[in-house]
Image (tube, rainbow over all chains, first blue to last red; front, top):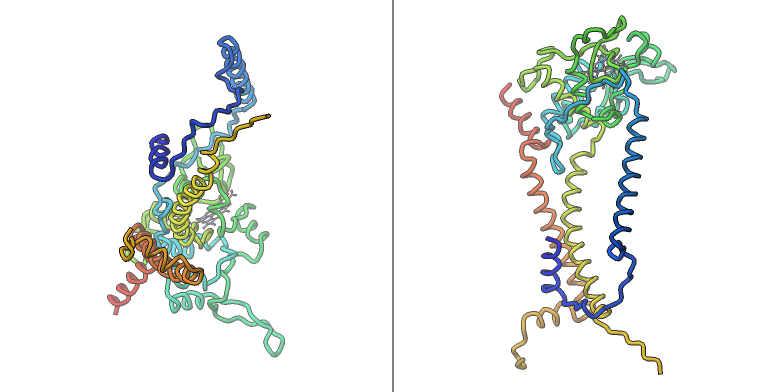
Length: 303
Length: 70
């Protein structure tokens, strides 16, 4: 293939008769004797094998390592040029708001972030107005409560981390803003955690207040199973099965962690197309500039 | 080459590229048209790949749902 391309470009672009140049460094493997070649090959194999063995012997197998790795799921947005499915992001917002928001904050999200992304402005305003926000001080120096506005943050379920721990058996529910980027496996891991609850296998003890989940490192997670069939009703009528809820909330959290996702892929397409043209042009220019040098014969004639 | 039978590439060279003023103008006007055509075509490809998934599609769905409820 490479020879074909280079031959074609040689003919199509510029003819360079490389046969004129005879200089060559004699430093290659080719020039070793047969015995030396065998020796070099044997030393290489032994070194690689030894390093591999040492690494393998040093790797301990721990019981706590027996964590299931999440499978790869065919996300709508998994392709190099695939955007997020906005209908799914919107449903995921519903799941977050009605289920996860009871324990998890989304510290860096504002109601204005929803506008033009998963809902129209009036709807986002109505969403914001559902919460009460402490504002002030007013002209008497008193703090007061008012309905939320677009410029307000999503509410935090707990006043501080200590309150969050106290309410959850000592475990802190992490902020979910960047959680898909903060965990190996991203949304695959999240989906597996949310749908992977099961009875512990024989011989595995799960402490009081913890729940068995084979995808969570260590196997015992402080979060109880949060998603069940039909726990909420979607406003677009999609059947709210457990896996549907999990898929939608994962897509939503991907969008929250990476709001520039779609723009990034759109720009990626443009960049790839522009740069492939520029690459061809650069290659042509290189050959043009070098053609005079490569076809020149330099002779040294001492007198 | 006959005196008044100039080839197309020579003509293009003489009108568009020979003088610096025209060369600059060619680049500026060319960039204008190229960018427009490039943007339109990449947008088209991108929207074909992601048909039905973007916010503009969701917006239509929301409007339809709102109309049905009324």
